[in-house]
Image 1 (spheres, rainbow, N blue to C red):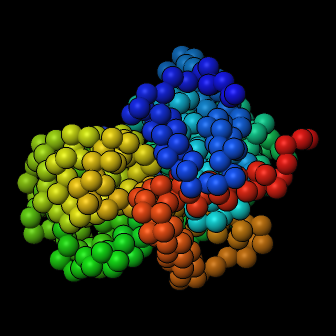
Image 2 (tube, rainbow, N blue to C red; image 1 turned 180 degrees about the horizontal axis):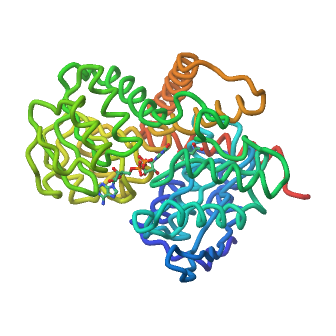
Length: 424
Ligand SMILES: NC(=O)C1=CN([C@@H]2O[C@H](COP(=O)(O)OP(=O)(O)OC[C@H]3O[C@@H](n4cnc5c(N)ncnc54)[C@H](O)[C@@H]3O)[C@@H](O)[C@H]2O)C=CC1
Ligand SMILES: O=C(O)CCC(=O)C(=O)O
């Protein structure tokens, strides 16, 4: 009998609670592997670190940082690092577990990991962010490495932060180790195509899902929550495919235009001002009204827990493409399924980013770099192939794409676990 973990207190709608419920739903489809299922309900390793830094005004501040390695059966840990004031150990545990599922869904030779620091990066100068990042990297340096665990960007982190992480790790170990993080600047071993890869993956899985449910992208109306790295790249690709982006929401507000935004104007506005708020080519909309917008495709690409049961009852879309990790709580998932709204779950929909991170890691090891076309073609092929397999499993068992993805991935992870054996 496995004892529950003492250090988290999940609820049905919290990230770890959501993840546990998603895992429980696959047990009936795992056959003999189901006896190993508790392996997936606890992280292999969770590190909490103190980050002391001197701020620009001379005061000393302490921040809390985390790196969680959920499962390492299939290879080194892989997953991003998030800077956000609401980051908690429980959230990072869930994000690391979703990485295990996601990496297995696209068959990458990785386990799942994730990290975070509980800070509001907008309140720090660039110099403070550099000091915080370097200290965090040194503190988690005991468990990361090109063959151990490879961080990458997530919410509020970017190529510059990855460059500082790579440099700190390299200084501490005495040799340049480009493969310790992905999502780096191009001239420091980064990969072409990584910045837009997650949004591209959302588009590719959305395009394939639309084809399967006979939804024409030409003229399709799209609503996007979160207009950062993931949401903006996905919006751009849907726009190029003939869809109209009619609504967008981020931390600066919600905007609407029934005819679709002119993305050639919206993109520079977001770049210049930091958000969609104040964009002249749209009407302002109330934040809650976003969930009532008439559209065919809804892309949550911000944070967890955004699609609640109440919002799920109001969604008008035919298809939800989860660019964010964990945007839909389980009760909402059930409502969307009952209403016949297709959900392409995070653990496959947003796997494009980590897939190109894998390409970056491979390129770093071989010191041989690919063209952007090569990257995009390989990415497309992996995403289409993975979604095809998941769709077959969903059809076979009459289950949702989320439970089908978990089934495919849990089988792969637990099979590796069994083959590796228990004893040191
Ligand atoms: N960056 C990546 O490669 C990957 C990111 N993801 C997930 O995609 C989601 C977005 O990540 P990124 O685009 O990288 O982050 P980002 O930091 O570039 O953008 C985050 C966006 O969310 C918006 N946002 C924050 N709080 C909000 C709120 N309360 N209401 C509405 N919008 C809000 C921000 O304004 C911003 O537009 C996260 O769930 C992340 O874990 C998933 C796979 C890979
Ligand atoms: O690129 C990576 O390694 C991980 C990206 C990530 O954090 C995610 O897929 O949620």
